Length: 293
Length: 321
Image (cartoon, rainbow over all chains, first blue to last red; front, side, top):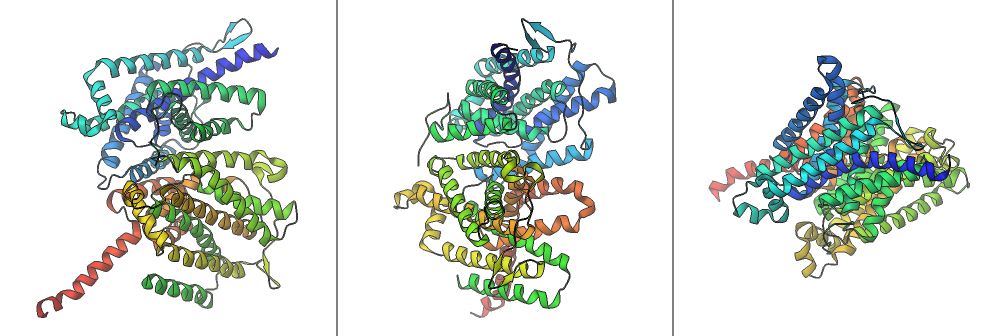
């Protein structure tokens, strides 16, 4: 293959993984906006989505779409339970303490998943045929198209929800100023609960979409979550469009880097980008101006 | 302050008396790991409890110490002590590079930056096969020697590792009770107020962060010369998380908490080897419960019991006075 053929192939792969990072990044952004917490358990929701779908599909014998819906719903419930049991009861809710709790939550969820499902990789059937589509000399798998379309749909729905629904507006009010939102009658506690549910839902959706391509196991969440986190920082922590942009950029650069530079350092690319962003433009591409001490 | 030094003295006596009544070599191995991990956790406690920042990449600094020592002594035949100092200098430099931009920002940007650095470092340890031996690691690291004694067995290394621990503990006690320590506590209470009082907030936070990375580097060098073998396994993100767990469970506002937390979490898996699969689950649940019910950790709980006891003791006198 010539280099430009390869380039197209790498771009397709990059946008596919980038879409997954974008969904994970959106999860970080949603929780960060309503609480300032960096939810390091975000990746575990991605894992839960894939694992639940992969395990109930053969177990219950339901159609794939139903397994997907059940998996996303279950992960959403886990996210809300986590907020209710581990975040809300904290008496001294400094942001640092809450971040540490999310780390505890992350290894707890991972530990439970390992006890339930063991350490083996699990496959999930592709949504539709596995017959790759050829566009000129570039190969696209149908699952890639599902991932891109699914992410696009999620982003559009999320945007509409934030712009037009009353709950979405309340969430935005919380992000802007929690005290003022409370004075206007927004129940901040409910919004925090809601944002944990929402970001678990997006995470699980990402997990279900990606499972047919990469397989899934109890420990896939950490890396996916952390890369989503890099994406959120690149885009500007707190900005939804930034999270999507950050995800796509990181996915693409990772794929290009793995292809043209070194596949061994593939996983280091996202983190190096994050370090560069923190160094030179900590507000990210679309973030608010940073407050200096 | 006096009380801290009394406990320090007690700990020192206990540590140097232990070998006279316990002979099991396995026991020494566990104690050595408590000392090595304890040094890292001590530094992290200074950072978390006294500067109010968290590092999610301390295993990376620990790895920097270990790999610098290993590479310099094995490939370039440096004296282990000189290698240890060079490793320390290099780690301090890297930590400062990371800390200077991020500690100026309001919020928890250090957590993110250290997390990124930690992951990148572990990948470098895995990928630079010619220097580091790659995923399978590198052996043949020489033992430490001093005054004609080679620290080649558990018994001797036990004294060496705990001597380091006591030394750094003493340094930390001094620091905490110094002008800098008071300034740091002011920062962790209220950064803006501390700044208006003329405390150089970002410079002090940088100092304490570099110091805690330096502790980790020293512990890493000790680890390399104790094991005489290093591989990327113990220097990943999960290891960093475990170190944070040790601080949290021990209690981040007390230096003694660091020792307690480390002792508990290092010996727990040794006691429960059959329950290895439950390790993550147990860590997670303990971390959450401690943060919710006892944010000052074990040290805070012991302190609370102590002050309750004191109140009880004083009560009978209250009526007569």
